[in-house]
Image 1: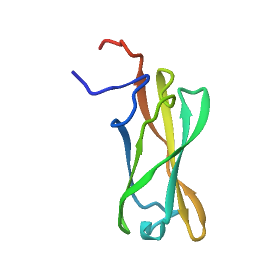
Image 2: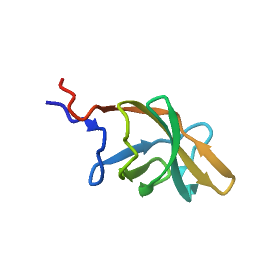
Image 3: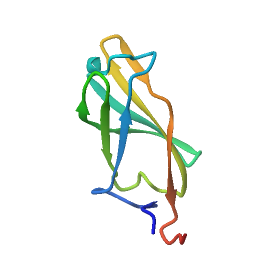
Image 4: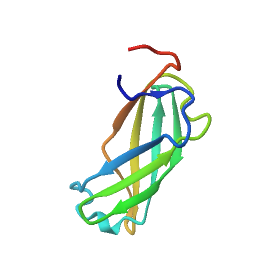
Length: 106
């Protein structure tokens, strides 16, 4: 049985995203905050808060605890981490995760 995220899931389930340096942001130690831009199942866009759980020059881990209403439809959700630096906001590459209907069967 696989681990799945289902419609209606809430904390303690959370989204964990690991970020690595890029050409736009080679030193992650300058990041002062982060947030998430989310496209929900290809339909609506949302802004989610997140917490920087760990940070170094070469890696950042952000976490977001799901709250009621966020995972409101099945489908593929696309997430972009927005990293705040002294020079402005730098987006990461998009990442995706799937949300299944509450009673979906593999």
